[in-house]
Length: 209
Image 1 (spheres, rainbow, N blue to C red):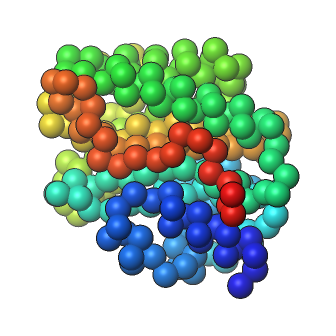
Image 2: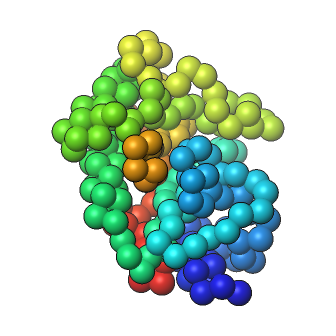
């Protein structure tokens, strides 16, 4: 097994929440992910590819939890050389995710959440790399359609209500440099704020570190 793949598998085990999911993990083979330029698609990609040194690898694992269809999203950097722009993008995603989740309350709208996301990313200088949505509802039907419209986008008037489950994802795609960073968690809306159903590390995930 190439050293990059071995280190990435070990990092994935440490990063993905839930012992049950980790026990079922048997390696990268067959698991959709997005290495290199494929990370710019902002979705895991099926088909053969290669994970290299100094790479960026997108993961978006999904799992069922208490009748919820939930997901996480994160980017793993393989190193050994880490581009400081990746670290700056990670910091922007962390800030945006925390601000979006602090805005999740019954009565707030999807548009409110997107504005929290947009303004946080803009303060870090990455507004040109931001997508036009930063999340969506999940778990409304079974089998899941994964994304339930409307999305968390500008001026969307859908009001948050208790017990809704939503996937909050921060995705930065710098098409000039080809760099990308992602960070996403599924939360349940409660009167006391969001309750995380999945969680991802806030610090950069570096394979083998």
